[in-house]
Length: 528
Image 1 (cartoon, helix red, strand yellow):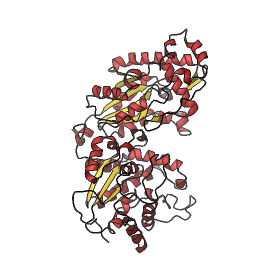
Image 2 (cartoon, one colour):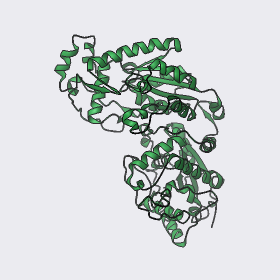
Image 3 (cartoon, one colour):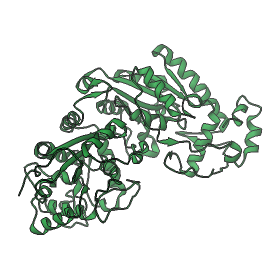
């Protein structure tokens, strides 16, 4: 069996593209960029679903062949349909989560070799499967001398992958009988990339792509130049970058991740060599807000910057409705886990600052929480405010009643969904209060937060109506400027969900109008 790809002619478009990387790392998005290239991706693709709304760009026959290759190398479960002996060994369809030691190389039977050749006979191909990390040599053996072969290996921070895989295992029926844990997923991630780095990457042409960089035009340019094919850039949707780290990475996984980063660019993050950027003292930024004020679209823009790691609402998973029966951890343990996950020079976190929101989980006020964040490096502050707190509350109530919280720029704007606004009992976080009480709490809360942050280094004010509502890039550039970073080109991934007059959105508008007109909040009734 050939253990290396055949020699091929440099330059020109690739005749064979292999896309690989750990599952839930962006292999589908990377492969989908070639969907208009004319390359054959298989005859039986998987249909899109919530995990990959644009599709998987993965062929059932390719998966089946790789499953067969791996099945010959793995222990067998006593009963694949039950959690008995070997219940942590992936069964049929689950072997992208296999843990295969590097000293084992899957060998193809005559039947599997014949099926591989049949796939390759379809013409110029772009084939994707995370299992290629293990099975690539079996496919190389079926290639003809002189074929132009290139490999695209995508990777994502292991702690983010673990969170995404855990969610997939909880929600996908075909994984229901597989015993899984963060430790097993970290082991799978390490072994997949060890096979690539130790056994495969020294042979043939390779381009390593960091998932976070896939939303940058410069990375897409590099992929086009490497592959020789024009990409469908319209598929790149920043709203799909939604998973966040929830587990502290292992030393082995972090070391492999650093090797992959060196392979991917060997260069720089916003003009700073990566080795210097990651060893430099971190810049920690806290964005304080109350929700429904543009934080998602702003966070997505920031996350596309090569020097900024946007970790979203780091405490939200511990709110009662999210954590379920899990015990509330010590705040310091949570902060240390997030800090250890830093992989870019600037690490941004978000905190919903009302007492009924994140600080209240730990019996703190927002300023006490700021003091607890400071020793972990988060010492710069951005206050994100929606001046019209009535519109914030309306958006909150529409989201609660319709479960429609975000709208991608690629989605058609839906017709307005009118609701009856509950004026006497609205739940925000841990508390239920009247509308007027919430308007007072939020207005006073922002004022007291700014006053309290003044002796703690002050804050940068980002106002939704001024810096985000019409063009989110205004707020993005404002934060970049404050951090002393170039505002590299990024794409806006979300649009407004409720851009309609309140008279259209609120069934009981007349009642609302009578309630607020005599108050200092009357002006908010006329704002859009």
